[in-house]
Length: 246
Image 1 (cartoon, rainbow, N blue to C red):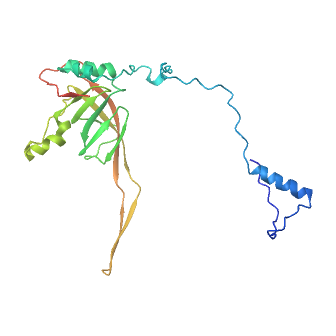
Image 2: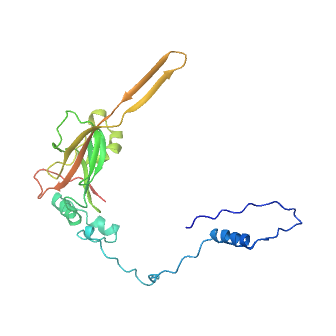
Image 3: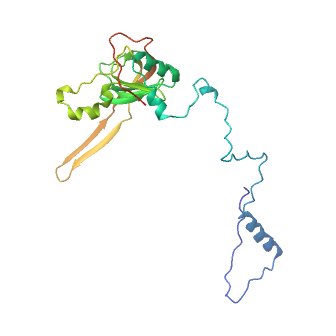
């Protein structure tokens, strides 16, 4: 946009007197200022717009992105058919999970770690308070408290996944609920680094008490990389299936 031309000095006239533009240069200058305060209309598009799909015609399918081309297509959800196809054994449940996911894509797990519950996907970076005992970067840790593992439409849940609801009717000593065994699903975490947060400065005082304190703190954190979520190749003996859900 060109620089705005400075407006000429204005003079005040009575309401019954109309100012006369004695100079043609001044008139052209005011005209130029008016043109600068307006915007030109947008040019018409160079390419025609796509046709609008009516209600009677189906919307054309778009080209699948290369990064998700290996995943199965999205099918319409039918609650009746899904409830009728729920598995009753471990091999059936694992086979359903494998049809919609792989070890590194399309799968998730809910695990308990450091007194917190986390929803984890492969290749995620998890930040936790410093884990003790301190392990060197590159150390591999295995999750032992996996509560749920699933994909887009199916999931295998352990009784501990509903612990928040079940423990209300249980005694304090009976709150330890079983998790998904490592023979069915396992996931490993790799320690990336041990770091500290920026310094936090807090000032505390008490009125008329002479109490003044400046508290400086840096919190320690451990960053971990989530590995592949591996499912069992076959059903192990003596392992029962939890309640599958959608």
